[in-house]
Image 1 (cartoon, helix red, strand yellow):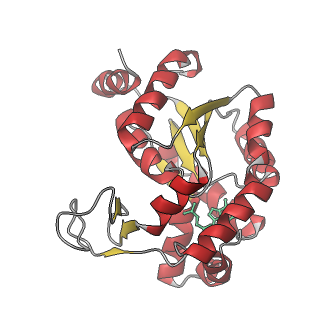
Image 2 (cartoon, protein in one colour):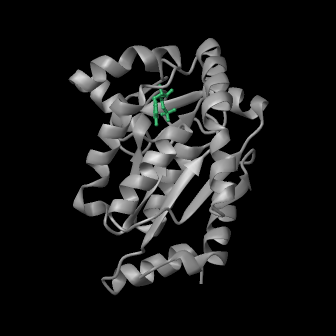
Length: 239
Ligand code: AMP
C-alpha cells in the first residue's frame, strides 16, 4: 500500500496521518509544487513561508511592508520576522497532525529555532526531502513559471501551459509571473540559497533525517520517488 492510499484509508477511519515533513532545495526545485500535491495526498496542511509572506505583502500588513523590499531583491527576509509568522501558523490547531513545510528553514539559525519550537511541543521533524536540481533546470523552470493569483496553483509557459492564456485551469483565477522570477533576481536567489540554505543539507544529514531525491524530471516522477521513500521510512509515521 502506498503512503497516499494509506492516508486515504486512515482518513476514512477518522484517523490522521501524523507526519512532519520539510522540503529543501534551491528555488525552482519544485518544493511548492510537490508540497501542494503531497499535502493533498497525505491529508496534511501545507505551510509555505513564501506564500504567507506574499499574502502579507498583498494585504499591505506591517509584516508585508517590512518583507517586500527583501523579497523583491531576492534576499532573505530577517529571521525574526519570518520565524514569528511561522510560529503563529504552527500553533494553529490544524497543525497537530503534522505538516508539509516548504521555504522554511532557509538557514541554520531558522532550523535550530524550529527544532526548539517543536521540542517545546514534544514534537520533532520526521523527514527532510532535499530536491536535488541542476542550475539549467532551475532557470528554465523559474523564468517560465506562472502562478494563480487566486488559488496559488503553479503553471509553466512551456512545460505546463494553462488551457486558456493566463487563466488558471483549476479556479479560473488570473495567472501572473512572480516579480522575483526574472533572470537577475533568480541568480541572486541562487547565490543566497548556496550561501545560506545549502548548509541545511549537512545539518539534517547529521540528524539522519535527510532523504535526497533527484528533481530534474517532471513533477509526477519526482512525486513517485518521494512517496516510495515515505513508504520505506514509514516507521516515522505515528497514528
Ligand atoms: P519562496 O516562495 O519560498 O521562493 O520565497 C520567496 C521569498 O520569500 C524568498 O526569496 C525570501 O525573500 C522570502 N522568504 C520565504 N521564506 C523565507 C524564510 N524562511 N526566511 C527568509 N526569507 C524567506
